Image 1 (tube, rainbow, N blue to C red):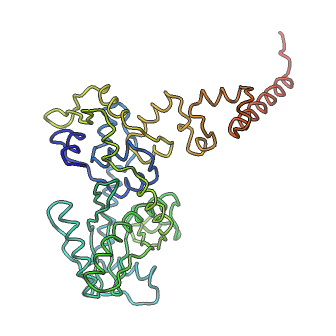
Image 2 (image 1 turned 90 degrees about the vertical axis):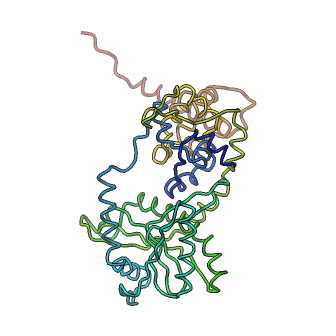
Image 3 (image 1 turned 30 degrees about the vertical axis):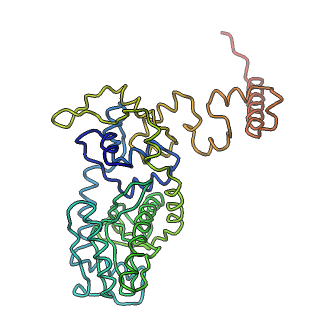
Length: 387
C-alpha cells in the first residue's frame, strides 16, 4: 500500500503507531478480523479510536507495573549481562561454565528510526555470528512482513552463541513461584517469543549467506521472571515450536492491507481531528463509527483481553444479535445460523426441510429437554398456602 493511502487512513500529520509483538500475537490469533488487520497495518492508534467512540479499553499494565518491570529488567541485564548468561547456561546448557563479563560482546544498536535500527541489528547479528563468540543484543529491532506491511518488533534481548545459535530472551515481571509461573501468562510470553523467532529466522537466512556459517534460531526461548516474591531473577526454558507454527500459519492467512483498503468507500479515514494540544478529538463519533463499521470484524470474547476496540465490537455484536458474542466454540457448533434470533427460531421450528442440519437437530433436542425439565419442575412445585 502507498504511504499516501496510509496517511489518508490515519489522517494528515498523524504519526503511525508501531505494532509490537503482543499485538502481532493477538492479530495472528484472530486472522479473520479484517478490521484489526487494517488498523494495525496502517499504524492507527486503536486505543484513542476506542476512546473517541465511547468504548474505551480497560486493560493494560499500570504505571507501577511498568516501572517495576523496567527496574527488574535492568537488574537482569546489569554487569554486561553476566547474570542473564548464567541463567541461560543454567537452563539451556547445563554443565558448561558461563562466560565472564569480558567474553560477552554488547554491540551498539543505536540508529535513526526503526528502519535504521533494524538494519543495524541485522549487521550486529552477522558480525557477532562471524566472530564466533558470545554476544548480548539489548532490545534489538527486528522487522516482519504482516499483511503486506512491515511491522517492527523489539524483543527484550537476543543472545548469540559461539556455535552460531540465537536465543530469544523474554523478561517479565510476573513471579515464578516454586519454579513455575501462571500458565496463561507463560503462554502469552511464548506467543510473543514466537513472533521474535519468526522475525529472526528471516535475518538468519541472510546472516548465513554472508558469514558462511550455519545459523540457527533456537526454538526454545529463555523466560526470566522474579523468583517467588523477591526481585531476584529466575529462569525457565520455554518451547515455542507450537506457537511458532501457529503464528506462521495465521500470519500467512491474513488478507493484505491494500486489499482491505481497496474495498473501503471513497474518502474513508480514521482521523480523529485532534485539537491543537493533541488531546481532544473533534470528529463526531457517528462519523468515526461509520468508518469503523465499513471494515468487517471477527469479534470473539477473547478479544476483550487483546484488542482496544473489543468493547465497541462487542456492543455492535450484541446489537446485531450475532452468535460470535457467545464465543468461537458456540459459533462453530451453530454452523450456518448467524444470529441469536435464527438460533431461537430453529430451536422452536418443526420445518422438515431442516432435519438434515445437525445444528438444528441439536437445538430442537435441547429445546425439548428444556421444556421437559421445566414441566417436571412445575409439577413438583408446592401449592401456594393461602393465609
